[in-house]
Length: 379
Image 1: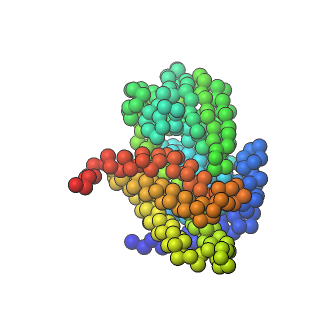
Image 2: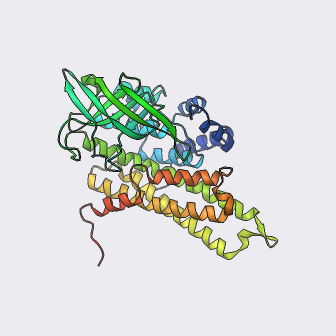
Image 3: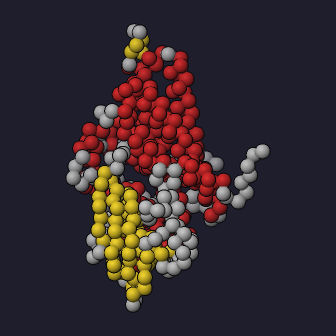
């Protein structure tokens, strides 16, 4: 199989990199994350103009029908540039719409950049188990009444509509009885507490109090949302793997440049063999992460759910390990400066840390991988 990116994919990557280098510098990003909104309308407009919001949307709805490999190229550049705009949240929400079907009008709005989405899935007791849902959606005439609280909803405060998982039947930790809904973020009974996370991104805790929803708010079939929920979050984890690779690339480049310029005993510290060995190991960790991210992007659309789960979890776990190693080594090789907010290196490490704990951390995905049929423990 040819793992080289196509000319079109390279053009997307080059366009994004030029924009980041020219208009989304580290200093400009810091101004954005410390602003009241925490995101930039101008930056979002540029992403739309570059075709990024249209990329994952089917052609019939005005998009480019981009694959996970196409999205991997984009997410790597966003990770390299530490972009904090609500792109990941929106394309994850769009994946729910695509898998559920029948949401052509909303997908057209996503493609045109008119609609920002967020996936309100996690709850305080659920940790990474997306089937652990206490939020309820009870029948009320022709519609539903939604009650519950979702926590750490990525860019939930910036979204126009929310993809919400709720229980319409079965027990709290059953995979059956789960339904998915599209809820306007400004609907009566929806309250959002928006805040900045440690990596400069935005998240929100969202409470639904007797939110009235029409029957048309339902995504897919009532009580049968688990397969869509699991497939969409695996897709999201794959995008995060790609973003982590981009962040590691930037972190390695910054560390190498520092070793070339920081002097001790009259020579650059990069001349010291021990530090060269550590940089070589950082590079190998990054390349292994890149290989796993590529494999996940290839397999996430597999028609075999077991293969998808196995590959995505293997990638998320291995990339979590690599990110931790690269981040820690970068901080140590930078010395005390490595943990200061004045250097991009610290922010890349924070972002890598948050990526690891989003949609399942290393330990969770190791356990999920081992739980798949066919896995055998070595003697």
